[in-house]
Image (cartoon, rainbow, N blue to C red; front, side, top):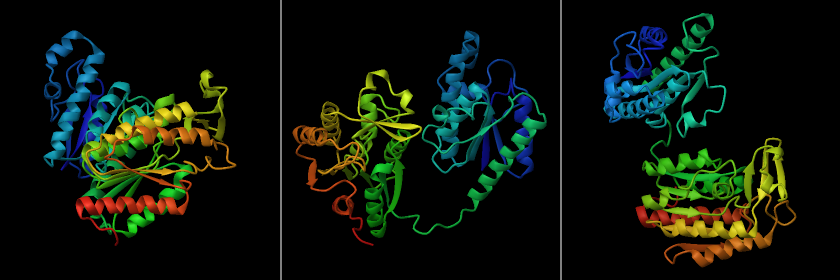
Length: 412
């Protein structure tokens, strides 16, 4: 299998030829895909730009004639993503490597995001030292800063490109002879965690692992929630322990850790067992204190660390969150249980702690009770979310549901 080298061979042909030749010199086969549109390619690619634009449902000559660079980049990104996915499904590629500026990064990472987690993906980019979430998304893309622009082979660019070549060669060679991992075939459970719900998730994880499951823990930082939802949609998970639904609060109030409107929907649509709780719904996340929007300056704020400021959710917001969770879980096609910790939903939502506000929590609980459908089981426990008894109850409830629906084991 080959490495797919994606790039614009009209503007960066010399650099791509260098990477192609050096990568092949390591013994790694290479397929070059040309996504250029301005001028003719510097060398003949394995996959033409005409093929790329056709895969995107466009005609290359027509796109070129419009002289609309934005449209060309967007079409090329769609095309390379479809081609990369097809090549991978046919067993023809084992990784993707690309280099470029804003356009090249947009196109190259589109191909990378089309491939599953675990497939080597390396982007050498002039943008890699800045915010990269739009390019990385929810995939394991390695971003390498190019230091200088991708414009010629010089003492700096050569050193960076040589490291990228060595890294890609190392990844694909290592992937070709993977080390056996004990328990890799165990059914997989996803769990969501925040620092303020860690004790709960750690106890529950131990119980699930002892029962024979592999547990993937996702940090509920927006990207974490989106990644988990994608893996659920991909059919990779047997069940979900969604302890920490805090991303819903950020979506509601405009915090920085929203996972989008589709959070808490994939498991229900997929019909897999899910245990849902209310972890960290007492908070909305912002950056440093001076980044908190003016409309929230008067609110109860807590400085979690110098770069994270937490805002306590109000009874009105908690009421809306309860309705949202009720509606999403009520639409589930599979077994669903909502676990309610009556004595607090995070480490700082407990008596004597900064976010202890019983009236706000009560509004959340009451809203859930009012709006939730009869097909969703609701379990209320007189515990704090981080009490061992609550964590144990959540884990055993999920094991019970898994056994009833799939026959998978409750104990190892």
